[in-house]
Length: 202
Image 1 (cartoon, rainbow, N blue to C red):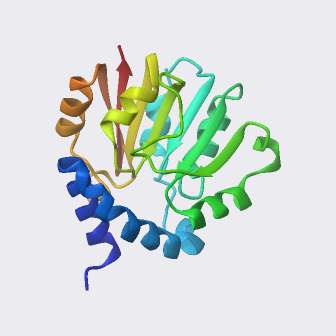
Image 2: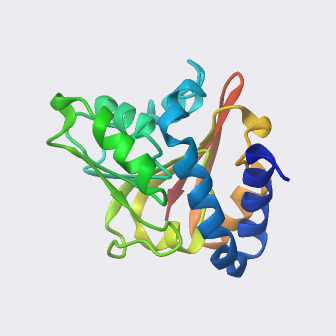
């Protein structure tokens, strides 16, 4: 039987290369992360946010932020703290992860941060409605990223263990797919072992 790390890597690779396969992969991946949710934060270390935070350092303060694959909300909370005027929405396919995220949300962020269950391949958001999209260890659905990111908006994709992260997409592939959909101004960031790629929507 394939283990969780190998399945996550396989699912990410297949979903990026053959998006139609997501219909088959979605259910097993949701169930896997539902099972991992209660112990998820014991699996991440202090390096987890390093490259993401570096990539956000010189980003213009956004008003509307979307954190895709939010899990237990670690990145969503960090972004909310980095940008105190922003409204942050964290979405995840796993109901159990969203339940954990809500339970762990500090009271001082509750007015600006919300979590909901959603599929990143079909986002319940209007076109161009988000100024900043963050994805940490998350499968990117490029058409939806391009659709919901406002012109001039920013996308940051980060991987907490670089190319050893179970859900990982090589940067050359990210640049190619995002570039085809109107993103430019690519920048790489590293906070060993974490890596991140930032791009701007034209």
